[in-house]
Image (cartoon, rainbow, N blue to C red; front, side):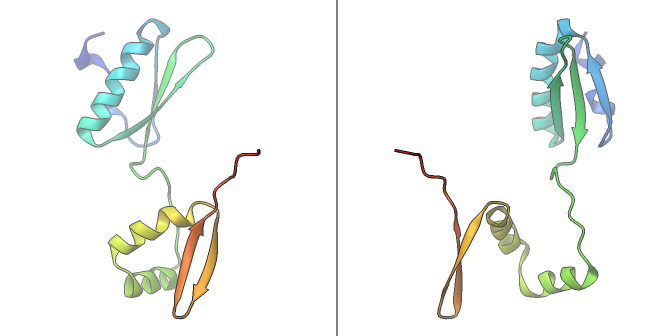
Length: 114
């Protein structure tokens, strides 16, 4: 299979294609390269028979639905940069410490057992 015949460039978000087992390793490498070059995201899953299922996913990978009121509250109070900074922290377990007028979010880190 030549590069121009790979089906990845024709996939829309949510669509998948299956690559035969004998081309799976080459396809996995190419889809990674193609995704990086085009800023598209793909997921690859090897099947029990060795074939590879390639799925085009959303660049963000997640969809979040907000009420209009929630969106307006965020947009009014935070810049996009600040929201991008806060969001990863909220995706993990954390604890809150209040100090005066500030709140500190502290990630919970699992401790190794002695």
